[in-house]
Image (cartoon, rainbow, N blue to C red; front, top):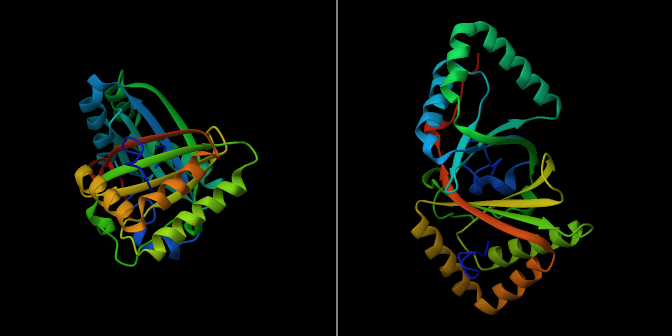
Length: 257
């Protein structure tokens, strides 16, 4: 989606590799809920926080998550859930795991995180395949891109339907021009200031992302892109973006028992 025209245009939550539907598969997926942790990590404590996450994985945490970090030191950990009861199931599994590893190891783990986080938030988002764009030949391939772009659009109250219609127009515009740059779209459903829509895009590097974005604009035509972009922003109270990286080194994929 258009970014660069407006000076290179939260999680949490959130684009993505393993844990979010791959762009190339987005239109084949059903709507899916994701539980998101958003940690604001102190810049001086990044290495300590990373070590704590890795230690938690080593200790066999049963909760699957994919990790992302942004250039403003936020870390998003995202877990798919079937429904809201999945949150209770996660808490139960986590408590059972804590009892299994024992108080000594648990206390040491908690101490390893001490002083690393300014605050954290939790929320739930829903993947919207019908408002996502999945090119037949994506660039890059979903498994190749670790650079991430997140767009966060806070919508005027009562304008949700209009905004969805505009997002469909973006999909149609990119699809009709066979643009190889895809995205996944989500809507906030809990723990965020609503109504909130967000989308994620990925590339191998930041340079590739902006080059592909500029190429897409030329392919479609800057006038058409700007017309639809202005229409999009006309429905927003606020628009923010973040850039960062997928973090497979901090992701947890426990083996099924």
